[in-house]
Image (cartoon, rainbow, N blue to C red; front, top):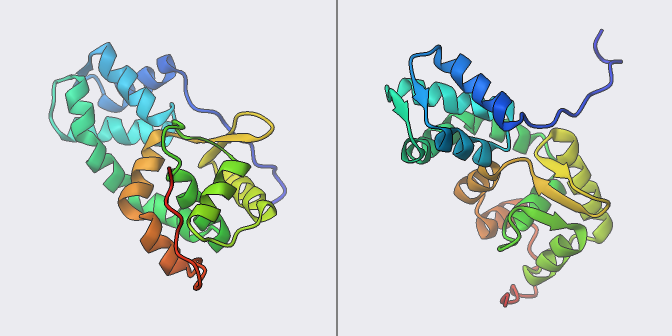
Length: 193
């Protein structure tokens, strides 16, 4: 049984490993400009599954020479292809973890980097009752799932920017917090500055 085998957290592929995976996925039917490979790597942080989704999506688009605009046009199709996986991960998470993740996605100007205190401040601005301990446990839950990476003792980042795009498209903050029943009933959100 594999139940006793410890989980191993793998990092994303390097730029070169991502290029190799894309070329293998394309089976030499398409060629990539280096800038296009770099763009895919930036969007995916080298996450092997999502790099492969890009490869299959671009092969299916019948583009022979992939350029950066081709990559950007492929993003919606990649998000659609990843939808069931993302929904499965989302539905497997606790309500508090779901709330913490959508709150963290609203931290603008941070390039996907967040801390417990920043998520706590965002929760307070949105009138959401989550303690600092709840947020720590929630971020650790996403860390274990692979959607977050730990950067330092108190900082985290989304595993790739496509996760943030998926959250923005499919889990808008106000609607998601209402569905999770996480809003305080007596106070309105505080405007962020």
